[in-house]
Length: 496
Image (cartoon, rainbow, N blue to C red; front, side, top):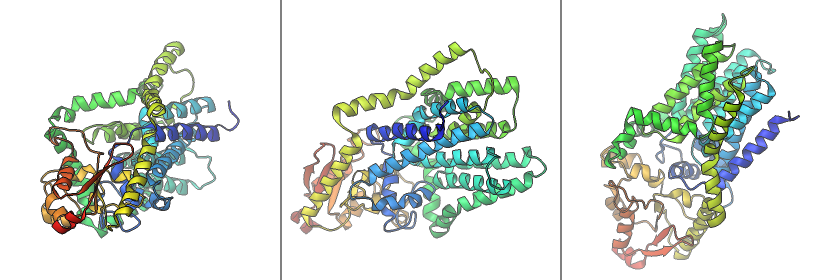
């Protein structure tokens, strides 16, 4: 075994996730998270711009808004790569602290890193890497009784970590709450003291969320709860994809995401071992965290690969802590090898595509520079309107905060009145003409949302393109050919 496995794991995982950051295609979900960090320079989530998750991530990543002009998008992908790599190391440390041999704990952490969902978390600028980092940190703090920290302080810090995960992504409230219940009912005589310390830590972790709730309650409740409960399902129904909301489809998709990597096989092995040999001193809490992760994965509709991520840290810690043989070695190795191929398939294929055609994120950086230069040449101040603000965030082109959430608020229908949209800094397709005509923007950027669907013929960008063309904006094509920049002309200024 290696003399210093933790630094080696960190370096290897970071290398893999940085590669993913360079080669994975741009994901439309990145729009809201990148734009939110940029807008932290001027305001607060919910109060000054809408946000669709609990708000800790923009606060933690706000310093990245001051990186070299034009590099914010890539910097946030790299920050997520570092957070995901940290989660891998904490899973190794937790598995070893829970009783696993260094070799098996190391193997468990490596297998976690090779899950497609984990690579996705570490490769894009979404809000998946930070909460899984906090979850893995919290598990390690709970199981490592050898740390030179008083037990109640250690449990307090674990609660703080889980509370921070909830403040980054609301779905982590399920494992955080389940763990609190386990402490109450499965602990020893001091369980109430431990549960209280954990709850106090969790309360500190959710302070940023509670503060923003108090500052802008209407926007907070709409963005974190109402939108999530209604809008994604509405969009699928409008696009004739009701089948994606059915329970069998959800289970099938989640199983498919787990099998892209060794997670599903490891889950089966952990279950087999649990029912054959029973639990251990940390097994009950980890088992319940796995169950809680499964519940959290099934709650959002429709299902996507990132929703299985809360399952992974407790699952691989549980696997890494197992002693003795698990299953027939030859057959197990063959099955795990097949799942590892599936886990790496997408990253490998995207790496080949990037070698042939270039890095998607570097194309976005180049396009962002180009957009800023041409807006400077136009000499017109103001904020650019776009459903793909991540492509120029942090550059010379300022983001209109009403479009900070990219396509997500824009595509919803009938969920807010015009007065509510104005109060909560939103623009939808229904209000686009009225809003832009009242204050024509200096620039409109399209090209990120061109895929035609039944609910958006010509793509979600079509209304923006149509408005720009009707109002005599001058169109220019970016060097990559992906984006179109519409600049307000003198003729358009007179009409405005």
